[in-house]
Structure formats: structure tokens, C-alpha cells
Length: 482
Image (cartoon, rainbow, N blue to C red; front, top):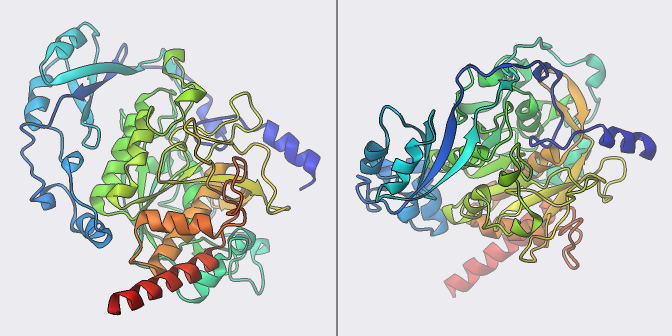
């Protein structure tokens, strides 16, 4: 793509929270039916009366989740315990609906129609604070809209002699094909995709071979059909999961997937960080090994909720605090850096600033190793390099909600390319911890000797990461025997 055309294309892309394009069908607005309404985040004092214990994690975590931690030598701790049921009963009544909770941060989400009841909630001994994170708008855009789709790819999309088809460049640039050549295609790995919707994934034949374990919607009100929402998640999933040789192959075509919706397209408010956290905790509980998040936050509908750049420290925002906990739960989080590089913000968003995760920027497809102008930059407020790595995202080849192979721009799409290959790498090095896999990917990237806040550690070389990891594993085994 000529540089001028690329620049004009980028300028036409809005800086949206789904770090991608806005579907045209979301433009019509209707009056919000259930207002006025408000959602508050209640911070609880403790977990007395939870009814659960650290000694019996099987009551609230799946066997796979417990095994993931055991394999990495990670303990079950008090943050894993569900919120106190006693406190939920104290808080919930006719005026207050509990619509969600975070066990990691010990919070409840409550929905009210009258803000005066919040004074009563704040006065409860089990509540140490309350923050409004959502208020109903006057009007919203309907989002769950059915669209037509293609039953098969166009014949012209076939690439003779290349099993990866249209996705070849974005995989081979990262040396991902070398992992696939030794049979590492994501078998046995489980990936959660946290996004805003997965339009027609249930209908497009190319997705029928994908091992989808289930879907969950954490947005209030729940969507009538996550497969009729935005196709942003469809595109993200395609980069990892599709397996149609000579047309399109993803980076982890034999992994299993959970599709989790946390993005509310009707408004842009802080409650989405609570939804995101609930989705991450669900991914933990069912035993996911990796999470891909192509979502980011910095500016909200209400100015008081928006972030300042000095708050990008991985600990200030609700979502980033949750994201920073994931590696110690044994989960590898891959997050898109954001598309603000050409705007006034320029920096990464939330939760891309989190600690112990892989934040992925975007580089040009036609000129690999050159950063896409829109790709958000670091560092974090506390001086950590961000992004961690970069991959092709300007444009990436994807499959959209109409079942068509197409180009799209954004770090939203460079992130899943990396996430899928990280799953294949971890499959090959199963004894590694999440943090060790992250370190391997960083160390085996093109800019590892001089990481900066544009390219991070550079372009990952997943084959080199495998070879280095294998060598370290063999050395550790030899030392243990001696």
C-alpha cells in the first residue's frame, strides 16, 4: 500500500475502544428504555461470610484452573475467594440489584434507579467506598443486528502452494510457521477472547472447525445474541483460530476458545473495566491459559472518569489492576497497545499499561519492522517499556463478520497474531510459567538489546524463543540430575 494511501486510511479510522473500525449498522439511535439508571462499584472491606475456603478451591475454580496453577507453582490465595454471600444479601433489596462482582478486587456492581439509596449503602459496615461507573444515556444505538454472510471464501483468495493462504506474511514474519512445522498448533491450550461481539461466528462455515467451548456476556443488559453484535471479535478470533488451508490459517488453529463479551458499544463508561475484570476472572475460573484483549480505555463519555497520562502505571485503573494480577494466576494476557499514536493522547491505554503482560503494537505489512504511525507508544508512568513487542497490523489480513477475507488496521489485530503464537510456544514449553513465556518472547525479539517505547523489544522470533526455552529446560533438567 503506498505510504500516502496508508496515511489517509489511518486518518479515517476513529480512535475507538475496540481499537478497530466502527460498523455502519450501529449509527441509528433510539431512546434508552430503562432510565434513569445508575451503576455503582462498591468496594467491600473483607470476605467474611464468603462460604468458601482456600483449602477447597474446587468449589469455585475448575479442575483445569487449579492444575494450571499447580503446574506453575502458584498458590490459591484470598483474592480467589468469591465475594461474601452475606454481604450480597445485606446489599441487595428491592431498590438495589447486584449485577456483578470481582473476587480479585472484592467489589460488587450494583444497579439503582435512585442515587439517594447509595448513602445507605455507603453507611454499611461492609462497604468501604462507592463509585458511580455508569449512568444511563438519553439514547443508544442498537447493536445486535443480523447481517448476511458468505458460505465460502472467494476462489481468488486461494494461494497455491502456501498452506497459510492470505495469512502467510503475518505468521512467517514472526517465524510462527517453524513452530507449526513441529506440530505446535495450539493443541491443549485454551484461549479466552475478551471483546465486544462475534458476529456470525456461529454461522460462517470457516469457524465451524474452531473448538469453541462457549460464550459469556458480562455487559448489562445482556445482549440477546453475542453472535449478532460487532464483528470486531470475529476478526480477532479469525487471526488465531481459522483453519482453511491455502485460503486462511490462524496462528493457533487447534487451540480451544472461550468468547467473552465485555465491551458495551452503546456507551463509553468506566463500568466496562468491571465487565472486563469479570470476563478475565471467568477465563481464570474455567482454566484458560491465555487471554487476548483487543480493548483499551482512556477517554470516557464523562470527563471525570477519563484518565490522565500520569495514571498509566498499571495500578491506578481498575482494569489494569486486574490485568496485573493475571500472571500470578498463571494466565498470559496479550493486550493491544492502542491506536492513538497519531492523536493528541499518543500513549497506550488501559489495561495495556499493566505489569506482567504482553502489550502489542502494530507495524506495517508492506515494510515489516517499521512501526504503524497510529500505534500507541510508551512508556508507562513508572518507566516500564511499552509496547512489549510489535506485529503486523497495518493492515492485517482477517476474516470479517460477512465471512470475507479482508484487510483491517489496528493493534487490535496485531495482538491476536502474537497471542496465538504465544499459545503454540507455551504448548511446546509446557513447564514454563506465564511470566517465563513473556520473558522468552521479549528476549527473542529483534530489539531486545535496546528496547524502546515505540517498538518495545521489537518483532518476536517465536522459533528462536522455542530454541532458547528448550535449551534452558534441558540445562535445568541436567542441573537437577546432578
